[in-house]
Length: 144
Image (cartoon, rainbow, N blue to C red; front, side, top):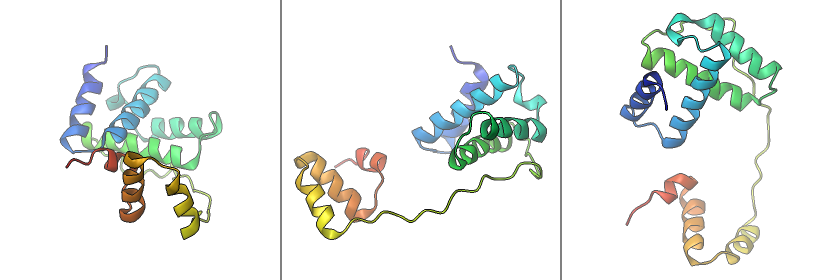
């Protein structure tokens, strides 16, 4: 059974119309943050505890920069939107830097070869994603 606190976080996320994936990710990070600090209530913690948690993620769990930033965004959401206690200046907490990567771009021929191997329903979804730039969940939620 989930705590009433996490249910209030869930209600806030849904009130602000965040995606279901964001809801799942944020709740997971908030849960991990609370457990990391021996089930202390977040209202009794602040910037120092956030910094310790993010340092733990980077140094002990070796998470990627994107994962570290997602955790920071979840905790920032928790403090500002749910608790109404802005974290203020996160001086000791620096956003992790993502490595520079060149995107992989398929040629028109490669895209056609890929699309030739899909059946009708998947073909339509793939063409919509390719032609319009929709994400997977956006395509799956489309209605006629």
